[in-house]
Length: 411
Image (cartoon, rainbow, N blue to C red; front, side):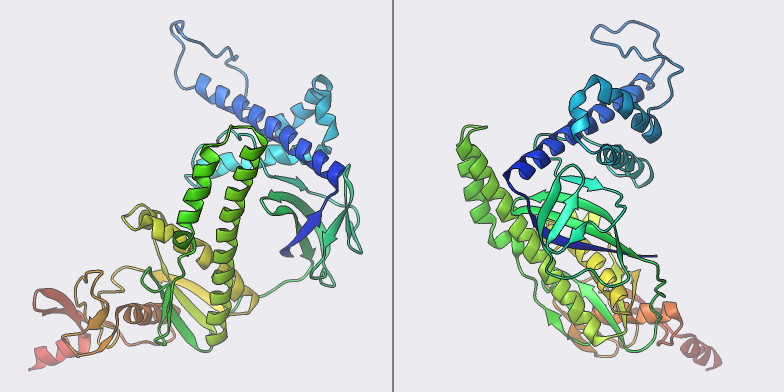
């Protein structure tokens, strides 16, 4: 099965937009109620009750099971009888709210994400229609259950052989969007490592340095607009909360954030396609992005968006049948790509790699990209010069090849 997501702009009329906003608020309330139910159950099981609390106590039976996805999903039927407003929302959309909460808990337990949080007003911005019996798109209209036909900007057609499986309606600062999940019963083989290879090194001085000695500058997406963002946020802080002017100022801040996000994403896609034009095999460093974002250059690291770029590069490489793999990032800037000697740690101000063993001179980031390419080829077994072992240059320990050690023993 091949699944693809296409994003289109939609234009609901005034009544449809009002109904969609009501749906978002109802789904937000259901999400918060289900989260509170799980949170209270967890808090009631933290320790044994041996005394009455002076503040409050959770009165939950000890034999009551954990309210998981299936129990909360089943409870929606009874909740609709007690709260008739829930009937306004399509039933499967409400069930998807429980699925979203369950997914958040799975990320918390299995992937060490943060504990799920309550959604404040305006933080619940999407609803999902998980199933369609027939194609909901006819011409330039998309038919949504209980909403009706909504005008859609179908800037690219649905490919032949694909069927619409899900539709997610998203509210952004710039308007409403429909993310359509399409599916085709085809099997796409994974790209095979063959052809020209390329190693890339990500950095803050230059966004990317390649093993072919190409340097791509890093745009300052957030930093360049930071002063404008601060000015808009100061204006927002002076407005009366909840007033019309407050909502207008809040919308301007949100639009600027979306503009920064869109420009960064567009740049990442352009660079990803540019790299795929040059090689059939691409290697990148497996960076610890969480640790990098907490350092003294954390703001610039987050502004560059290395994590999102690597995800985009992986997706673009798969679409264009380019093999992509990550390699170990340790000591890539301390190893000479020409002779394999470890030259020692470099300061950030030292931008040129100079090997005292072989005299090889190149840009520091280009040398790191060459090492990344060599490690990737070695991992694939495609043939690359072996690193050297156990020699010392000055105060720095380096390595020599087995052949040189045998020759020294023979002499």
